[in-house]
Amino acid sequence: MTVRILQRLVLCGICCALFSSCATMGGWFGGGGPQTESGLPDSIAVGAADDRVAQLESLVKKHVDIVARRKEADQDKVIHRSPYYYKEYSVYDVDWSALEPEIRKTESRTAPYVADVVLPKQRFATKMTRDRQEALGDTRFQRDTGKETLTYELRNGSWVRVGSLFLAEKSEENRNGEWVAVQMAPVEEMNTEKDERGFFGRVWGGITGN
Image 1 (cartoon, one colour):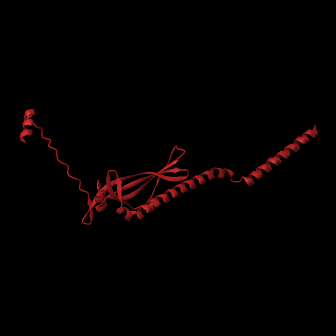
Image 2 (cartoon, helix red, strand yellow):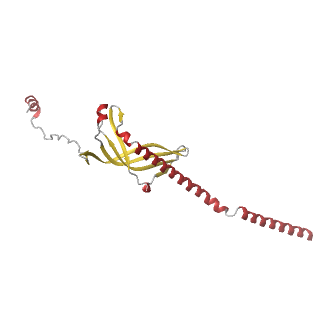
């Protein structure tokens, strides 16, 4: 009876020693385990978000640079949008430090993120005409000032531009070297006075011109 009790005590002692050793080993190799488990995904997510924003800004800058380089060539290039011809070029004036892309998460697997980037823009365009030669010689550009929204989708880890929308806030034309507001063509005033002459009176008036 005494021997069995001693055996049990020895086994309990060995088990306690093993559990203690395991706890110590876990402390050496798994130290900070809970902290890593909770912090690592956040670090990865923040890094990925930073990469997405940086990649998007880089892409927008390339777009603005390309438009700036094409400015002089576009001033003499005739665009054909059937049945009209005209010339058009654009100018961006971007404060990159104030640029704030709006990135939204979607339910789509192929495009999990969508981004809108709003840029201040001036668009210069000549009037539309059906005559290509007339459009080629036209140097009277109208200036529209407003904001353009570029829309991108994240596909396979890369941003792809899928659309753009320009909204003009004011339109101007160059007169004697000065930009002034575009004068709208006058609308012909309609005669709203009620004709009381009756049917035969109106017919006779149409014949006589009165």
